[in-house]
Image (cartoon, rainbow, N blue to C red; front, top):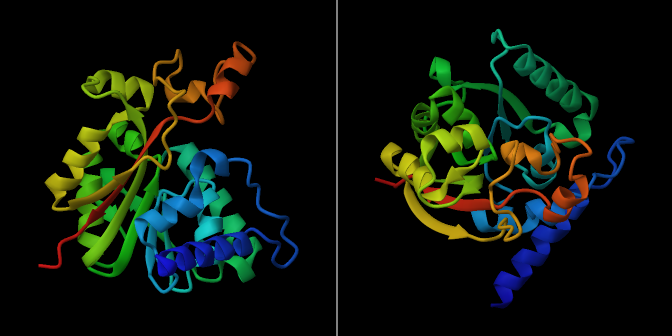
Length: 257
């Protein structure tokens, strides 16, 4: 019990240290921690500082900033395809690369890679990473019809025994695929099914990122809630009071044999 408490305290110190200015960078915005619980999530996934970790579709780099300060191994950021025709993907990747380049002291261990399930592309080497994590992205692969291919690529790049950690917006059990597509919420059963179909074994689930105030039924889907607030000023206080989405937190393992 003492070792567990010590490890949790050590992880907390490391994550706090990653939020402090390095080479003049302002302190990390911690306002979303109340909904995203990075300390508890990273601890649940079992990430250790010595691991080589892949972050799939890091977006603007909210979690990258935390992981880069914690991991002493390599953090492989598998971002959007630079050859994509989608302007949003290109802008997002460019902004992320600029953020990484602007602070080499913090992001010196970050290695850029490309993930594009539609092209069956993940540029990290096969059987190479200790862990792979992704945060609130599975619904995007569902919308393009490439969710199964994505999970297959993740399985291929992890070492035998490697960890696969997922956080995703959670729909009510039995929600139809069409509703998942329109709402951005996924059923936990379907995410587990995708992982197991790819070869992963579900090791544990947690309610770290649960939000009982969220019923997953909103006019603009998950984007009705913060931080998107797609309805603008309409019922703004109502959705701010709900907070960010209810989320599943799952830990899978690639079998050793």
